[in-house]
Length: 301
Image (cartoon, one colour):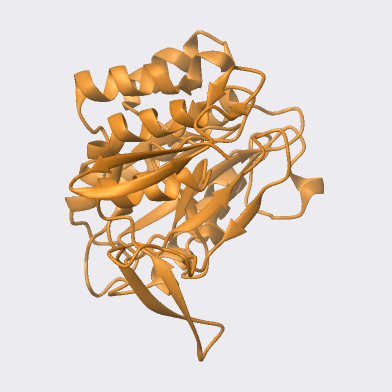
């Protein structure tokens, strides 16, 4: 096993197997992954901060087996920030908090290609900062159908006085976030509200949308997964890589941009790879920053 000792923010890190090709169909090594996360750090860290990280690790690359790791590894460095959270009633679990660059680099050295986080922070685990509509295309549907649904959702939510923000999932779907950032909001509130909206969408667009989880209802439709609004669920973090043939990123889009890209009729146009993600973030800034700070109240439906 090859090793290289580097200094990151005053911490010495031992990085291993930097030459290992973790995206073999694309030629993207662990060193490339570390470099991507180093460059995107100032944009992704605010979205990871104080959230219980679930690592999705691909030690032999994205084409081989992976495993999820919710518990922070016991061999973590002493300086790495952690939190104890409750899981399954009384069981406690120690989780990693990726609040700084050195922790992000340590996590990526574990080949955690994907970074998944809950909608709440560890200090208020039952208070979601946002409500999410996870748009998941079924068979014979694709990300262009998700874009149609997202644009309808935008109009519906705007009519209710709610601002919303969108990102690609980095796979086949799209994620619509509605920032709330209010101490009194509960997951019961967001789940009930999102399920009601999904049901309204299904009623009005039955050939395009389903709010039902069973796969037989999803054919040629977009499933609005309202159930993600739950304290036990996680979402792929914005700016995280995804384990695909190419190093595609879950990336925020502007609504006008989404409309324009969808109008081109090419699903590939809605996929953002790592080099484009870095270039665009450095040029445009964090298009998802409002999700962290904008305060909104859910209306009664």
